[in-house]
Amino acid sequence: MQEKIKIVMEETGCDEGQAQIALESCNYNISKSITKIFDLLKDIVVVKGKFYTYGVHLYGMIMIIVDINHRRHLRTRALVTYNPKVYETDLQQNWYEYDKKLYTARLLPGSMQDVTLSIEKKIVEEILDEYSESFFTAVKKNNIMEVADILEDILREPLKTSAVNFEILNEELNLTQFKKISDRIFPPQMEFEFKEYDFGLVDLLKIDVMPVAYDGDFILQAGRLMPGDEIAVLINDTREISQYLSGLIGGRNIFGAIAIPCKIHEITHSKNGVAIMVRLAAGVVGQVTVSENTPIKVVKWVSRSGFFNRMFFRFYLIFFKLFEKIKKKSRIKAHE
Figure 1 (tube, rainbow, N blue to C red):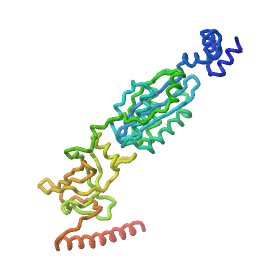
Figure 2: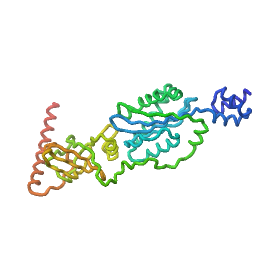
Figure 3: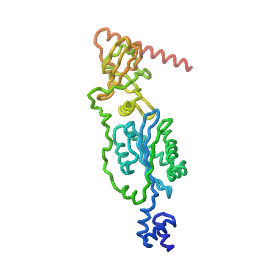
Figure 4: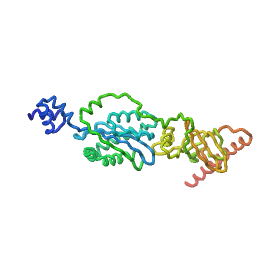
């Protein structure tokens, strides 16, 4: 009897009491007892989570699978994206359906591949090192708040945010359930629908932008601009769709908004100032109203017609180069 218990323990990793129960329920048949152990013991826990960050407007999904009996890490999947639709994912669904949706969403527009891979690595490293004791204990006790706090501590720095809001749900499996599903190969399926963010719109989608005047070789007052000129703008619209689009068209990185060059689609002068509309992408334009004398970085000018415009442009270039030389000399003297 004791020898059979030892064999079952060695083959399954269970403890003596579990091996004895399995043998007794299978009339001391070792092979059947080993199979029974896999069915009886719910040692596999799947931590399914979704999150959004404050400030940088990122969204994500996480799935961590562990063997709580042996404190082993089995698998980690993650996603970081600009797409807010991801946060609507249902955590109640089976873990393998959740895994498919996570994997599929990583292939869709808005997904930040480099950041995703880096946080996957960091999660695995931290839960096997600094947070090993606290993480496995929290998962075993189904302490969702503690798991969320640990994951927030791990992700706050790589996501460059002050806070990460988590929703988490644990799902328990026995080893047979886990092996049966995890050994399959799931074909990619387009699980997410992004109809709300379809860019083939009849009406232009308008989002707020802000022209910049720093770090420029050529600065010009807003009143001098014309349609076709290319200027640098920041997307400062706080709506979720705007932040998502900003990431897609290169207006954001993990550190925040970055200036992007855009052609002026339309420009209108009125008593309120200069209303500028720039083309950001197909079906998407940026809009802003500034005063006539607002300095704006010009990336590229369209050719001007007329003697006055040509003379003004030449004069401006001469003056700008002279001004830059004076500034450079002033900086050199200031450092001496």
